[in-house]
Length: 441
Image (cartoon, rainbow, N blue to C red):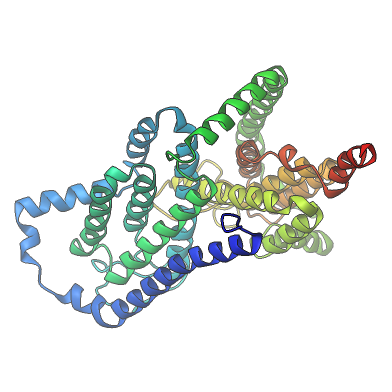
């Protein structure tokens, strides 16, 4: 039958569909390399007096404004309103794409450390960790991420949004904020992260509108049946958050200033120092893939869903933690023991909040939800890792309390998107359900 498609044909079709984005990504990387070799320095050295014309200055200022994170909530709000009844679906797409984009861009900026052209007009300099924030372009990545999502949801807007994205990216070169290769790689990151989010939540079209609407109504009826249990759960979580914030404030006022907490005969013993180093190692991002692999193997048939949960949870946790660190700029106890001192964005200090505590509590909540039997050991493990940061004079107690709270909140957010209950049915359970039917036949 010609109209029937076999699984082999479907998988072959999916592979063919993946070839085009793959080729485009390779092409973009080649263009970025050619730009680095031939264009980056030449464009920076090029005289551009026409950009000082009032009209161009206004246009470039608007382009910079359109691609900035300060305007992102307004743009996202307008797009979400345009989605009408499917606004939640589009909001999830935008949220996940933005978090993925931000994580990739910020980590690459931090690790590569390329100075901006207006700071150092030398395209060959890469200072490494924390040296600069030119590569890749955050404006280009955000503009292209929004362009691919908006054009998929609203095809009529396709050409204007892609034109705006290209103009925003080019404007970053014209104002000497980025090299040409920076905006090419940034545009690629934005496009890929937007495409990933669209793959998870495809846009609503005339072909799938009826099925998505039916699914949305079914979820609404299921939620109304469980609303009472959800209200109790929400109340308990709100209470836990309030208690954690209260504990952090009490710690900041009364425990953080204690001088003997960070330098005493107990923590200076060799075995305590060794145990603290083990706790520090267990909570580092280098070990995260191994811990995640163990959890995914234990998840069995649910590994895909748990993988999404851990990945997005890590993105939310890491992004929010780094943002808070930059905003507060609190020195570590080992650097400057003054718990009342916060430099904000003026100087780079990273004590508040604890990234270790945030990560391990996010991991513990997700693992405890998927595997209730290991919930208590997982929380004990998280508490041990968090406490080790105080023993090493890397954090104040209030740092680890708020860090742990942020990790828990990150896990709750992503578990609301991918709850494990929807994936709990195993092969054994399915065979048990099919057995009575087989016997009846």
